[in-house]
Image 1 (cartoon, helix red, strand yellow):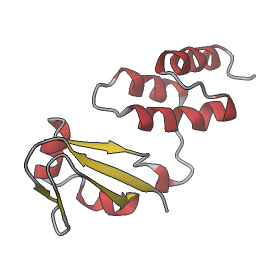
Image 2 (cartoon, rainbow, N blue to C red):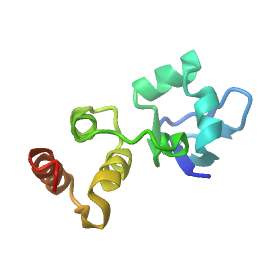
Image 3 (tube, one colour):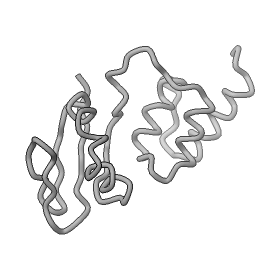
Length: 119
């Protein structure tokens, strides 16, 4: 199973509904499947949308064969709510071992892939 790290960027604690409290400035490692059960809770969603909770890891990792298209991954790069590691993880599913380390280089590689889909 894949793991996610939830980080609380605020000085006060945040209680995950039905789960533990993440101390202010602290983080918690959880299973991606556990995150999926609380991510749509109104308070959790509001904190994520406000940037008070950030995620590190691929929250879609347990969904199996539903990989994203090049266009979807490029859209992730432009979305300020998408964490870099989530973007990089999705890009690496398309680019494989040739995935660059820097965001601008990943975007360039994805754009190149988009122009050569049969390659």
